[in-house]
Length: 439
Image (cartoon, rainbow, N blue to C red; front, side, top):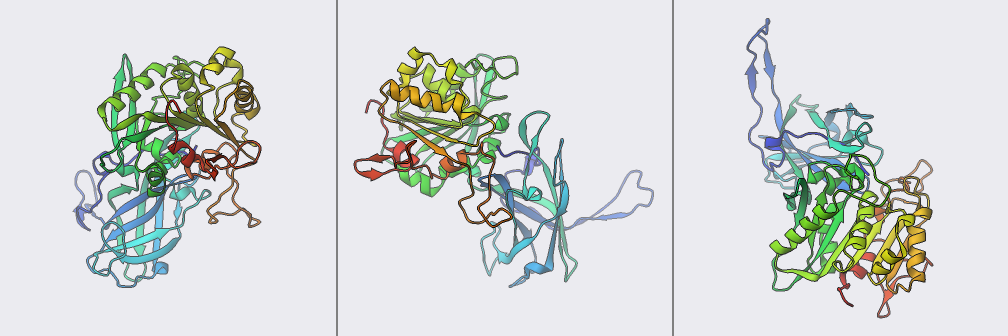
């Protein structure tokens, strides 16, 4: 669960354009030297979601006379990260990997009045993260990232943030629904309008993404990828609903973890789902899918166990529902639901031997015909960009098996044989897309 952040001047958090350039402001009040504080130029930050969490990838600088071919080595980028209980990377310089003349959105343009700087990002680069995982609360939160960017040749400085863009996350709508005395926030994505019914994918977050800002759900794990062209094309357009609990899904009602299979949010979550479906008439009621990671994997299991006739399929990831809490009667109620489990053998946060392994084997013994389980040895970077010191693929925390699901890389069943349908090998998203209630 990638962590962190508290921030972003609410009034400008979603701005995509610039509102002004450099100015000088004279100090007032008790400034005994009556000195002039120089404000520099304005910049906009671009945030993208990655396997390890979000990162600031670009700074877009407003420039009255941008260079046609700016030199990346002619800029320094200093960032100061402030917030509650920041563990590492409070301030320092970020390497610039590319510089070019651009438009206001950061796209290369010879006619643009902006300079875009791309910066190095990675799972071991905390200075680029707009998040902080607060160990005292167990939640991700935004940090305040103050940038000072200097053009070494001219001495020009940009140090006033005028906007921010959160790629793909900005395409989601945000809202909230109250049931009894529980209010759940959510982020939702709507596919392009067409003349057919579209499926709904429900994503339930891990414990670190609880709170009151759905963008933390979308970016804490790379949930935004569900809205990517690649994933959307598999479903020929799908709605995405990402609810957010104020605490963790496993909250038994006292703010503490309940390990007995209960959750204070069960009815409120079902109410949110039903309200959202009712508000969108072109959602296919026979193609409602539910999944999530860790705490959200627990809640995925909780929802299908409580409402076994509602969902067309489920995809629990590193799920934390203790098998001992599932009765034989409950298990039989879900044996006909298509389910694809995902976990890693080296998960030190949720022990697969007391959760998914036992539940999967019990389902098979009960006669389940469409239940699958991809059991990874470990969680490795598959992009080729991030390496360990010896040059091997970067090792993520073993709990991060959601990386494989959100990148649509699960294909093998528990026995190591590809999951197939009609003679074709299927990825987890391809499998999910063809599931229909009552098949």
